[in-house]
Amino acid sequence: MIQVAVLGYGTVGSGVVEVIEHNNAEVSKNAGEEVHVKYILDLRDFPGDPYEDKVVHDFNLIIKDQEVSVICEVMGGVGAAYQFTKQALEAGKSVCTSNKELVAKHGVELLAIAAEKNCNYMFEASVGGGIPIIRSIQNALTPEKIEAVTGILNGTTNYILSKMEREGADYGEVLKQAQALGYAERNPEADVEGHDACRKIAILASLITGKYVDAEKIYTEGITGITREDFEFARAAGMTIKLLAQARLEEDGSVLAMVAPHMLSKEHSLAMVNDVFNGIFVTGNMLGDAMFYGHGAGKLPTASAVVADVIDCIRNQGRTMQSPWEETGIRLADVAQTRKKFYVRIKASERGRIDEVFPGSSIIEAIDHKEAVGFFTPEMCEQELDEKCALLKESILSTIRVL
Ligand code: HSE
Image (cartoon, rainbow, N blue to C red; front, side, top):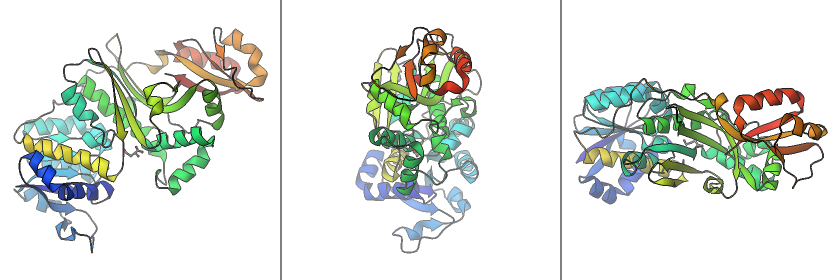
């Protein structure tokens, strides 16, 4: 019998207990041993909860219990979660987590401890919720040199952008509705400013390179500047706008990693990923393109991914499955020097200057807007775009990268 401890009895924690107990036949059969939750660590009590007798408040009880071999850290944050994870791994207990902040910040150290102690630090649920993207990269795609990963990795912003597109609504208005429905946090910064997606792409970038990519060094832009007008122009051009997180191996050996809104064709597979869903487009040098799609958040999808890791840990007791990340050696590409096309929206009064400042651009003629004109530039580097935009200064209303 395998005894599991769950740290944090919030949304994901209660989901983990539910998956293990409700699907116990499947979980135990696939693990090859009977699996049960022995402890739930939380500061609170849960009177009336079916698992209230498992709730404890002292982590020492768990760490000292030889019967507990796998711990699910679903409490979040990088304080106590970090300390508990470290202690657990040092004690040879495997840890499975949904905590992307902790993986992105301390993954190198925690993976190294796991390797030293012949246990595992698993984080399938930290990226893409219930979508098995990490397992796929680490198992199914192992013959591949993964050249690029491009994903819609944040459900909150995808919900907001999908609704703006569908309803022609303003960002602020949709954000309020998303908050009322519980899709966006009261403080939405981590989602709308792109930080959540940034941590997730940092993890994927580290996985495809085997080297630690520091989330704090990744260029990150959120969706707060996207307007209803941008969607009007996108629609007229047969396109849509998505917050994309990208990690791409460059020819010079560097890695381009960034999070930013992009305009992309409505025909692109990622354009069809709507509402709170996530989608991850992976390009391998042999495989070509593959896309992963599903619930990127939510209690049970995320919990299911945590429990999949628990099962893997049980199947591989005494053996570390992942390679540690090298701490040095990654060179991030300078985003300012990367080349792409851009959508630019300027005041209609400056239409006559488009040819002079942005030669070779194509104006989006399908929309007759009184105040603004939108166009696509030819491919140029970001720095060049900034220099050109400086020439039109206050007339620039918006610029968005084109995928
Ligand atoms: N806030 C995150 C999202 C939750 O909206 O995708 C899952 O990581």
